[in-house]
Image (cartoon, rainbow, N blue to C red):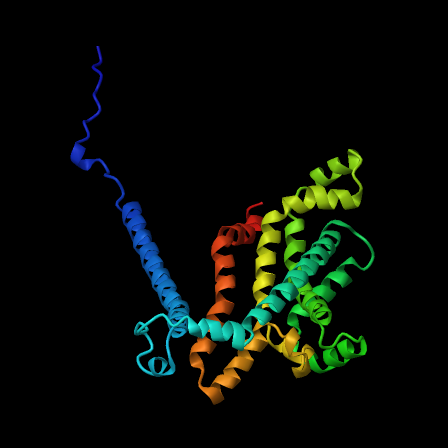
Length: 307
């Protein structure tokens, strides 16, 4: 009978081992990611120093006298001179300027968000002749520098009888804040599901009610983010108030104008402590707003990308 031949045994030494290349590639990728992360952290640390150092210098300067300010800038003040803050608030009228800024920015941002959200929703969700034309007209406002329109803007506001009034400044703030607001919100409204709006219409909601009670609450992250950005932008605006609130309307000046006036006076009277106190007063509200709402800002900026 024929005998069955057995297959020759394969030695373990001749078996192919695991390929070392994937492990080395993964190690190289981890090293590259670690290098990039280290560079990113270093850049953020440098940027934090660029931001924190001037803020610290300003805050410490608000409690110093002139001799200490022109000495070592980062030494602690010999005493907490709250009289600098008192002179800035009362003598330099920073309290009045702060109130004016709050009023102007409140109505400016409220009007911007109301009109901007409605315009963005219509341009994003409704098709009608000229839709793209209106959209691009809004977007073109992002490319138009403010200082190019200062002279014609002065005469337009003057002819309307609104020169030297908060009403004229609020209307201009709204006009200049609308392009970015419409551009950002229109992109966000396009990401919202159409089925929800259609269901609301089927249930008997009008277009206005659908917008205010259904779609606008869904866009809350983007609305909050845009509101904070508009607050920051309008609060720090200097050129527009300088042109639209001239010197004879000093009681209507906003905070940047008031601080510029204090700076000019400080150059002659050497009241640098009051100037730094005024700067600190103008910084604190915006710093508090950003710290409180930083999560809403981040979620609003990423919400559209995650939908």
